[in-house]
Image 1 (cartoon, helix red, strand yellow):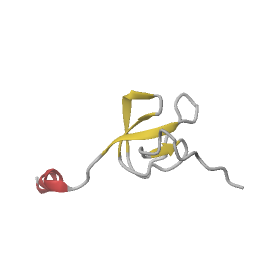
Image 2: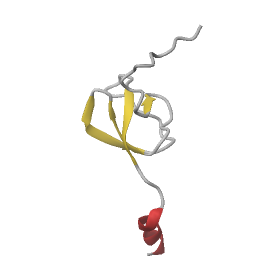
Image 3: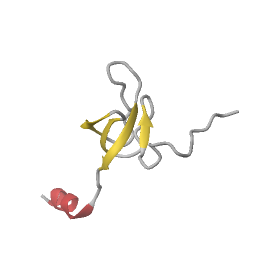
Length: 76
């Protein structure tokens, strides 16, 4: 039988990804225990280990695609 994570997990309201899995969303990701040093990871990239140790990453701020800024960059 598959184990389930408790419904009251402190990570339920955050998007998470584990080392070795593909990044689900482009943005600034940080370690579960250290939100002071975010890393920019793009969608589809493999989530890295830290010092050779697998970890859980938390999305702190998603990057926004498109919009007027992107259109003006393409026009130049």
